[in-house]
Length: 341
Image (cartoon, rainbow, N blue to C red; front, side, top):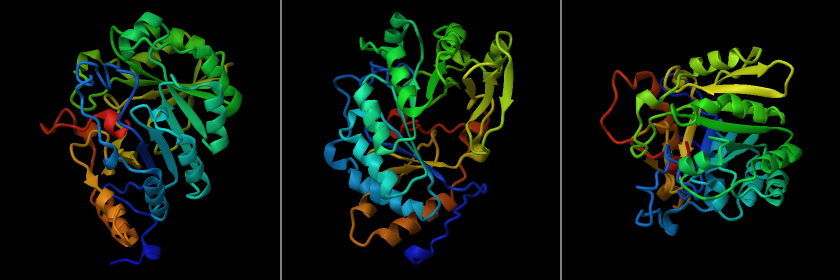
């Protein structure tokens, strides 16, 4: 067994991908019922959510992150469900930033709970950025997509994020014949802000979103459409980035295109996912996870946890997006709402 302080801090998997990034799902609950994530016909009043005693506490999450920092963890994204439904999320972020000393912490939210006071509180906690889900500007379409009657004052919310964080970032899952005719409208709206507008190809996550390849709009098609409207300048990105980026000339807007279907980025994937109940997943499209909760809840667990995670990552060979059409498994995939996308 390796000593806790001598564990390899440049951990690589079978495809020589380093571990550097952890996405943490802090809740499996959400106040939206988006068709591509938590459709209401499945996630209804009869749906069984994870019981409280199986949910990782903030102290356990912090403990896990302290240990993972020893083997390369640099970046964390807080997700859900809707992460702002978890009470005192700012306290978790503060400790991850000040005690664990994580370089970069971000959060993805539907924005429904982002009051001006909450945004300021998150900034004070040490949060580095907020990504807002933005699938439409049309209120009736928004309600159709997210399955609720919740209204968000988008301009006010984005303005407050820009005020406290200096810029805003949005995610739009593009679905053919549902919102693909709005991409220019969304870009025009976001030109009011210093922003990164990300368009995401509709993905076959989980088993409940009734995914259909015919509903996918390839990113190249979107780039071609937008290049007829704007002067796009290609931007350099980190090797591990999931997005191809362009800057719109003479504006404050950067466009990002995430192309998991047509241009997989598996070869650069440096992220693991931690579910709300303490399962580690090494791929968004995984059909199995690795239970670390019992290890974390045992005495003198540091060495056992690090050795277990080392084994998980060193044996990792996931590349689902690269092989989805040639070797697709028939095993059910974990739901995105459970591991946070």
